[in-house]
Amino acid sequence: MNYKKISVSHISGAMGAEISGVDLSQRLDNKTFDEIHQALLEHLVIVFHDQTMNPDECKMFARKFGSLEPYPFVEGLSDHPEIFEIRKEPDEKRNFGGKWHSDMSFTNTPPMGTMLYALEVPSKGGDTMLTNLYLAYEALSDGMKKLLMGKNAEYSAALKHSGGRAAIMNSTRFDVANLDRAEEASLHPIVRTHPQTGRKALYISSGHLAKFENMTSEESKPLLDFLREHASQPDFTCRVQYRKGTLVLWDNRCTQHRALNDYHGERRVMHRLTIGSNERPQ
Ligand code: SIN
Image 1: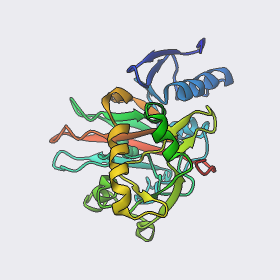
Image 2: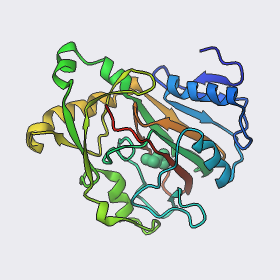
Image 3: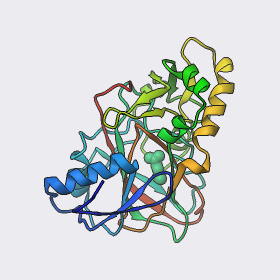
Image 4: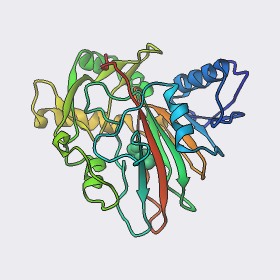
């Protein structure tokens, strides 16, 4: 893609781009937004540094991609319920989102995207790692692709190894919400086709993947463990580094991510907005 309104530079060989030349607090003209959208589809995660945005401006930008969806297990900000704060204090050891996952894959219509806006960052560390699930699919053998094609898996919010919910439950910083939804689970194809790019992705959401449809957890485990390991190998990943005012947007339909927890003793504060989708993964 030949970008005219924005500058785009790669973060890694696998995925991710930094975008400059745009102030996201301003209303974007259609051409600029189209290029940003195109960059998201092409690079899967896009990063804008040095943005100065209030919650209304974050919402205005996020809504250009779709309607906002509250995260089910944490209360949003009182004035902006669509936004919730991911905060780790210097005295906390656990972090939120510290295990590989694709956001809310346990719902029937998982969100298309997630946006983080960095309010306070540690002096070092606190990066987000992401992995490219198109590459994960494409690197499989033809035999494995055939085996997985048409198979559904169960994605659950309730898994013990899902660091996200466990971290919320054990944290005093979050106002936990909707515990009645804590056992929520959904069936989705393990190989999904992106509705806009038409590319196939391995839909690995490591912390939420429970088992294959019509199989037991024990029967599913060896293959799921292989796929989890395969999907997160370093060659498929990139690492997003934050400074105050960094805004990141990733596409949950072809990536999974994890928040690194390597900054104990320092504070990290992000505003998270989740961009919904009305589509079931296909
Ligand atoms: C998340 O999983 O939404 C959190 C990611 C992060 O804080 O880096």
